Length: 108
Image (cartoon, rainbow, N blue to C red):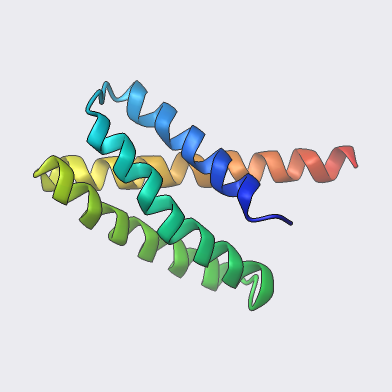
């Protein structure tokens, strides 16, 4: 599978989550894009080519949440908001991605 499609979908889904949380600062959205390039691509590469185990996915997602929370913290200056953004964005994008993948496999 291409790495570009999951990246684009993740950015779009997480941007919708931020918008639903009433985030309007452009720098937060720029951080979202940069962070996902830095975290989504390596995690997807690892999962696709090294190990697709539940343990790897859970640990990888937790590391992504922590990494992105740190990045959001640099932009928002608020730990609670940073952790909320990171956890919600990643949870929603993960489950939406899993749902889309399952639907795709079901239809093909």
